[in-house]
Every structure is written in structure tokens, then in C-alpha cells.
Length: 346
Ligand code: BGC
Image 1 (spheres, helix red, strand yellow):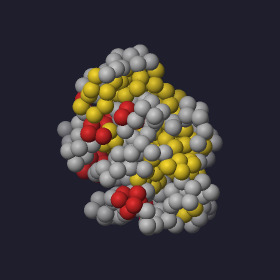
Image 2: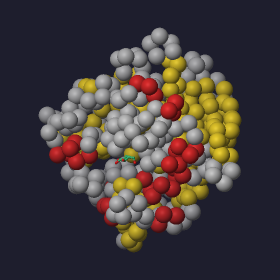
Image 3: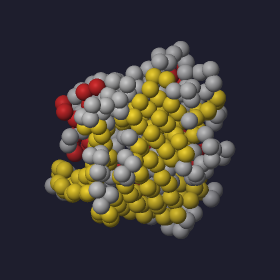
Image 4: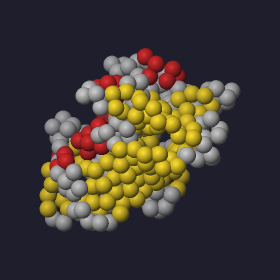
């Protein structure tokens, strides 16, 4: 096991952005950069032993900054959407940044993912990233001290440990927004990737991608991944939810008890033979199939990022949770510890 620290790039003002690379004894590596505590790369062998990077992304900080993809970023203070950018805590209404169509708040207004995080190597398999989100930033209450620790194990598990403590009651929902392409950057789209989701229900949305509040059974619909199927099999089905979002961009309710680590998803790419398993203690997972990629952004190795060139499995509290009292809640009290774990195993 080893961790190395190198200079990845610089910010426009010249500030350094460092890259931490954790490597295990199987030659699996995870690279994380300090801008956005971003998972920059995750390399593992294919069926012929050839190492390849399964994270869609960018070679430079400028690439990340110009992009609307949030690829590999840690997202917060509230991952995914808040209707009207509004929510209440203890009866007090807060208005946060409406960075999407001037209506919704998407991904916390882009706060955590564009911050430069402090980072230290805490072991030969682990790097700890910290960030203080000041009270009122993007409108969110509370000084929030956030720690995200990436650990790569000898079992090829990349663990992402999330911790946060607030000094004011507030909402917290964090995720990692990696886009996976198990065949690597040159593989093209991910429609042939086999995906199994351990999810019997999903949360349909309105036209602004805000959950309607319904938990809909996946049975007999294009949203049924319980038995495993190719991502592309039903993606063009005549289903208003898919048509509206140009593919999957929905929160699925993970089976089993939230708060306990359990299987979320399994994916496999036949061609490369690479596999991915996702585990988490969070209640939901956003399956997003890169629907809005349109070739205008150039990713790693000069590849034009086209529609469906990656899939995301963003473990999370359900979108817009504070406005849906029936959803598992994510309001945390002053001094209370937020802790969560998501694992990507290759
Ligand atoms: C959202 C998508 C959005 C993507 C990139 C996902 O979490 O659900 O609607 O396009 O992130 O911002």
C-alpha cells in the first residue's frame, strides 16, 4: 500500500491543486484531487490484466471548472435538488441559491465541488479531506465542518467516509458524483453495461426533476433493475419519466434499512470484464446516465463526451427531502455528528 502526493494543476489564481494517489498491492489506484475532493481516477485491470481508468473526467482543473458535469466531485451541502431552493428547519424558512433555471437549487449551489479542500495522508491507504462551509454560504445555515476520507483496501474497495458537524441545526446531504465507464474513456457509451440495483421503488419527478412524493414500484416498468439488465435495454421506453429526463436521472430507494451498510448496485461490462459493486448506508441512490452530455465537453485523453458516456450512482438522501416529511429525513442538530459510508468495489 502507498499514497503519493503530487501537483495536479493550478487554479486560475495560481493556487496549487494536489493529487493524492492511493495504490494497493493489486495495482489498483485511486486518484483524488483537492479541488472538490474529486475522485479524479480509479484504475483497475480488465480481464486481460490491462489497467484502465473507469472514471469519466478531465485532465485539467480548467476542464473541471468549465464543466457542468460535477464529475467525481464531492457534492454538498445538499446533493441533488431542493424545490425553489427552499426548506425549513425548526419552522424557519431558508432560501438557498437557485442555480438551476433560476428555480431549483442543484448540488448545493456548487459549493463543495468547487472548494479547495485541505488534505492529509493519514495512513498508507487513506487520505483525509477537510472543508469548513461557513454559515450562510449559498444560503445554508450553520458553520459545517466536513471531513471526507478516501480509503483503498486490499480487497479493491474504495471507501468514502463522510463526516460533518454543524453549529446550527441544518440539512446535510453529501455524495460523490463519479461517472463510471467500466470500459475506460475510449469505450464510448455505457448502454451495454449490465446494471443491477437493489431497489424495489423509485421517486418519480415533475418536469423540474423534483420528486412528486410518490414512491413508485419498479415492477413491470423500465425502472426495474432488480434482476440486472443492460442500462440501454429500456432507456428509450415510452415512459414519460424517461422521456422527460432523456434517460435515467432518478432517485431509487435502496432496499433494506438505511443507516446500515448494504448492497446498492452491481455493474459489469462484458467487453472489458470489469465489475463495480456499490454499498452504502444511505437511503437512496441517483442513477444518472449522462443524459445531458452532448459532445461539447472534451474529457480525458481528448474524448468528446457524448450522451450516455458514463453512469453515476450517487448515494444520497432523496432529492428535496426537507420538503417531504414522509421521506427519511436529513436534518441534523447542532453538535450532532453526521456520518455515512459509501463503498465502490472493483
Ligand atoms: C442530476 C442531473 C444533473 C447531473 C449533473 C445529477 O445528480 O440528477 O439532473 O444533470 O447531476 O449536474
